[in-house]
Structures are given as structure tokens and as C-alpha cells.
Image 1: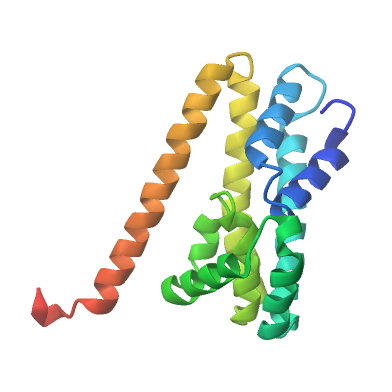
Image 2 (image 1 turned 90 degrees about the vertical axis):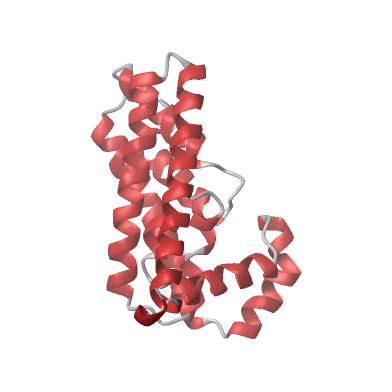
Length: 194
């Protein structure tokens, strides 16, 4: 991390959003730990990680917006194996997006694999770009700040760091599922049926 610097962090986070096997859960805590040793600034680490993620999100959004649906699915069927994604993954992301609304982008920025895929359905559904970037920025800044701070404050204790990461990931997943449940109840349960 010391050698990569802020540009390297931004590049790795960009790649994390494009190629899911490079996890932000390794990149940002490592960068945060490097900042704790005084070799980088914590704010710079968070800013670089957020910028890299958001540039990738914007690029994927524009791909989703400008490439016809069938062309995208054909491309994923042909080359997706190199990016570790399948057309069924893109189809699931599209279904989730259309079913649960635009706020899914906020939560999606904090969930591995979904983080990479949520931008394409946002573009395909013609979600306004400013709204997409608003929700993406909120989710991304929260997530990169959390990960960098974990590395900054707990980097010396790997076991504790992993435990905290696991618990927070589960909490985000539970909150996301609760959001979906509330959404479904509001959508399908009529006031007279309660």
C-alpha cells in the first residue's frame, strides 16, 4: 500500500467494482492500516477509495444505459467467465433493481458482488444519473470509511478485524432484507387486509 499510494488505492477500488474477485474488504483495511503507521493519511485513503469505486460505478452505469439489453447478455455469456459473472447474475441484479427501487443502489454499494452489478441495471432502467450517483456516493463513502477505519484502528489485531467485518456484513445484509420486507409489505398488503 505504501508503494501504491493514493492512485493505487483508487485503481484497486476501481478494479474491485469491475472485477469482483479483488475485494475492497482487503484493499481498504490494508490502506487504513498503512495510514495508521503514518505512511498515508486516513482521509486521503478514504477519498482515493471512494473516487475509484465511484468512477467504476459511473462507467458501469453508462454501459448499462447505452448497450442494448440483448447485446449485453450476449457479451456476458461470451466473456463474463473472465470477470467471474454470468448473465444470470446480471438478470438477478436487474430483477432486484426493478422490484425494490432505486434505494437498492445505496445498500448494493456495501454488498460484495452486488456492488459490481448494481450499476448496470441502474443504467438499463434509465435511473437518473444524478440520483444514481447520490445513492452510490452515500453507500460508497460509508463503506470505504468503515473499511479504512477498521484497518486504521484494528489493523494490528487481524482476528478482531475479521470478526468485526463479518458482523457488520451480516448487519448490512439483515438491514437490506428488512428494507425489502418493508417494501413488500407496503406494496402488497392493503390497509383493509391488516
